[in-house]
Image (cartoon, rainbow, N blue to C red; front, side, top):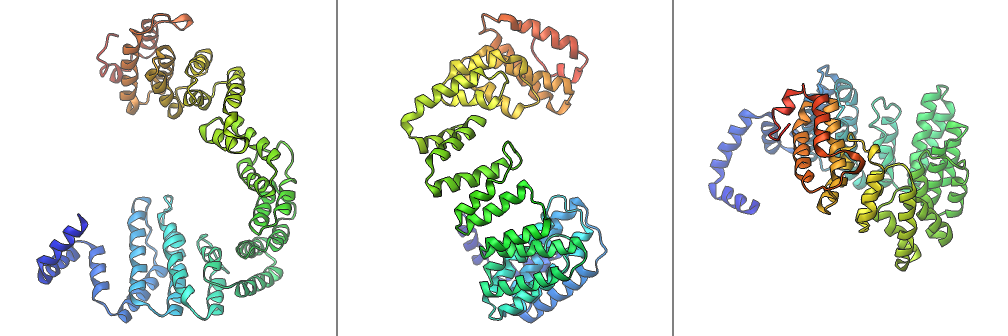
Length: 450
């Protein structure tokens, strides 16, 4: 389809297209900017870029949250002007660096809660910088530009160029950057500025896989180390190929600590695999499976212990789930996914008083599964909790969903013979009408019998 439209546009002829572009340029600033870029010489495009950069640095115009997306598009177009006008790598590096220096006039005068403007620096500008820097023969100048930019980073985007240094600079140049940053840190008396320099060294050390330097820098920066620091240091040792030292650092985490346990376990999985320690690997995978039952965690476990252990594992875990007193929607969903429908129904019915309709993202799929399997009582109890949640919150925008739930309950009720201690549908409906009968905007939409 795109090729067909392109061919038809070509057939219109140059004059028709020129007229169309001029018309668009009169109506839209972005189209006018594109036209200017297409008509300008490379030198003219560079001058246009420099003028806009200067204007951004001086700008006092505040960009609201609603205008941030459009402003981000303008900044991207500015980078396109640069790309269209510059072929000499060092000039490109210098001009992208100048773009980063507009952070005070751009991010400093913008409500960038959405992150759109910051992302132009972190992605678009960074990629263009790397493109030019990779082709630049004078790597020392590139390094100096990066360092000069990062002496001050009030808006947290300039360090993006430190984080991608290894993409465009060789290790010897990076080590020279580290030496310069260490010298600055040693001289710095302000602890926050000193820590900033050390954090940049950490990034560079990780990129060249110098785990020992990373470790020393983190200790110099923070002194007493936290769980997060143990994990970060272990990660860099693992990336550098020193599996044993990575494991030793993770072993420093106090037993029972749950902070960042996902990141820790992810590293441990890789470590155990590299060490060939199937016993500890199995133990960890079983613990992860038990903490969150899912097909994914089950498969990870079976990949290590063997698929022939499926029935044994399921038998043990189903018993464990049914014995656990608290309701977890994920456990109910897991029982359904492994075709344990009877057990799933039993699990829900025995914990019906724990159903919380506020958790509709997990409960709604569960209700649908129970309904499709003909487990109408269990499905009804879930729909009741969802409806109760909407009515109790009085959230008018969600009333249509509540009507859908109530009409589904009407339909399911005729298929349920025994209600047990849960009360039949009419009794439930009488209760909610008594409690919420004044919510006329809800009941006016309901076509059933009140």
